[in-house]
Image (cartoon, rainbow, N blue to C red; front, side, top):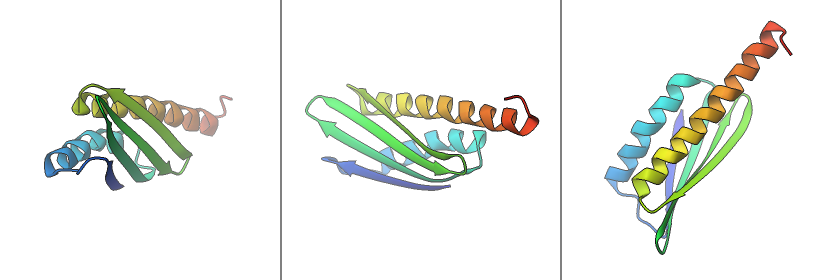
Length: 100
């Protein structure tokens, strides 16, 4: 899985970079069909925002999260992506087994 992290109105530090990489390892454990992930972290006054687009075999998945704390926004983002990945994986399995 290739992980691209960029910042908007923010310099991505090594601490933020390693935190995002650590959190997205959970996504790689759930589904190995994800090939590319693009994460954008932005700061707008008091709001910290994180958004991600995943490219994989089943298509694209997009999620975003917003919070007062940057690390909380990243946690929310990973939780949302994780739920979408698991849902997509369940659908793939059901289609393969013929339970439409």
